[in-house]
Length: 67
Image 1 (tube, rainbow, N blue to C red):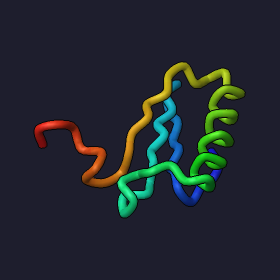
Image 2: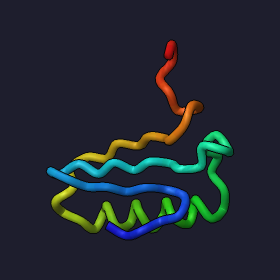
Image 3: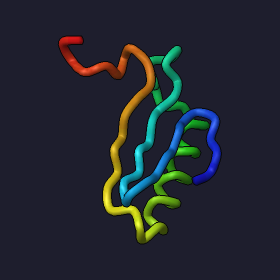
Image 4: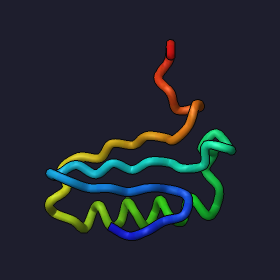
């Protein structure tokens, strides 16, 4: 998949994992990140092999509750 600066997108075995990657800003969505997200989601939608999307974030702000 394409390279991005503010997100990370990986796909394997029919599952795309899209990771917000601005931990220093608690993964707040900026205009630049929004542009990358739109591009990534369009890429995912166009790929017939991808059946699921997992959206996650990088850093402490994205840790599961209670950790």
